Image 1 (spheres, rainbow, N blue to C red):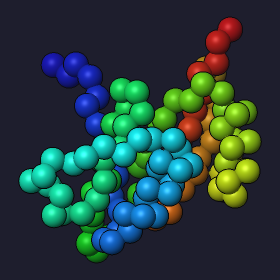
Image 2 (image 1 turned 30 degrees about the horizontal axis):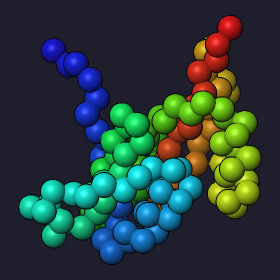
Image 3 (image 1 turned 90 degrees about the vertical axis):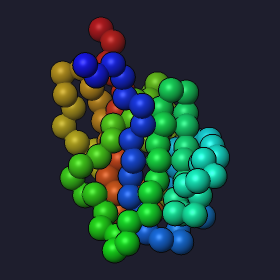
Image 4 (image 1 turned 180 degrees about the vertical axis):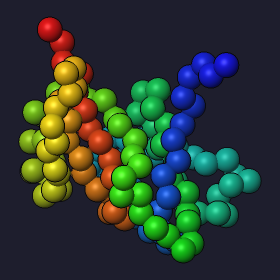
Length: 121
């Protein structure tokens, strides 16, 4: 039935597109892509990195997702955490899973984001 994940949508507050750009493009390295013209009036932004597509949609009233979260795989968690520290972005470590090392960050709106590295043995 399900073949692939097309995109994930994360909620954001109205009028905070610049903060989203600074975090998702500036910190996480996503590239902003144009939303279809028919959706632009709703606010929000779309981003991509390789095959990963993230849509930020305006939710009013906004409530951050503090437990539910996307998990973005990275090549080197050590490199990512060094980049986060250099960028003054706080992150929280968690217990590692058998094949996964991971940290959590919050986007500028309080949404939880997991950054994970798959372990190779």
